[in-house]
Image (cartoon, rainbow over all chains, first blue to last red; front, side, top):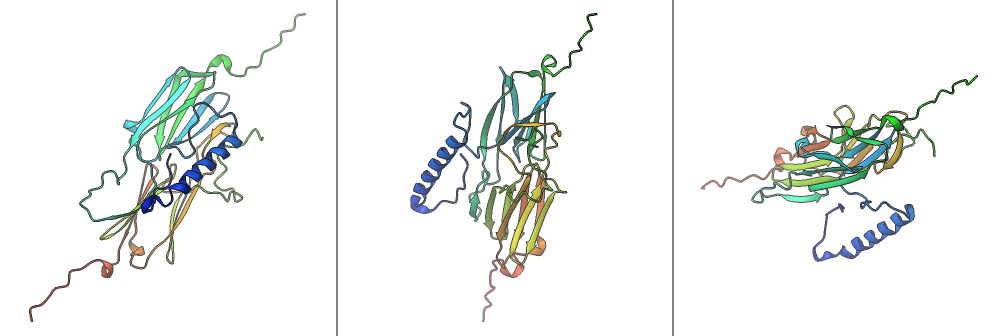
Length: 156
Length: 126
């Protein structure tokens, strides 16, 4: 759960954080009473958008600053898994350097998101590309399930 | 629910007053301040960095390039615009801000003015 990490000594705001978490839970429950069993907390890195057309399902993962070689995209039994790792400059900080950190909001480390694909998605036709920090994954839908017009033959 | 609702509203939609707040890492060393911001989807053409007096504003828009017929199934990111402002302090040299953008990560380096950098004072033997 990635929130701002500007913390104060003595955990002065620990109670506020807990209150905030409880609000998030209550609001999420109101917004979607039947959430997916795989639902994640708001603000989990990376954020994901999913859309569909008649031909394909498109998944967009907002993952800036990730080395594409470390990105792992796999499909298994209708579940698309996106995982990888992100290092930020603060991780590699040379502690001997004299510097003050004022904000450390950007998430770092390993991440994984799982998206359930609709029934008609064809896992053998998946392509992914990473551009400007957005990972775009396109899963084609099975031919048989695409909407087709059926010609009505004249029986006379 | 409109069947042609785009995954994100158009960047030119003037009624879209909500923006995404890009997460930042800010740290300071003896020579200046480094600010790193997550703005996935931004590229050089859509990125704007403005300094107005003492306020630094970083802003960018992006487009997912989805087709008009796309139906959203699940959207965590609903607006294609990032904006965040910071109040700077006078010892920063805003004329020499260095900015780079790679894979949606904006890296800003704000150096301190020459006279604001720590200097050793030479002690002359009298």
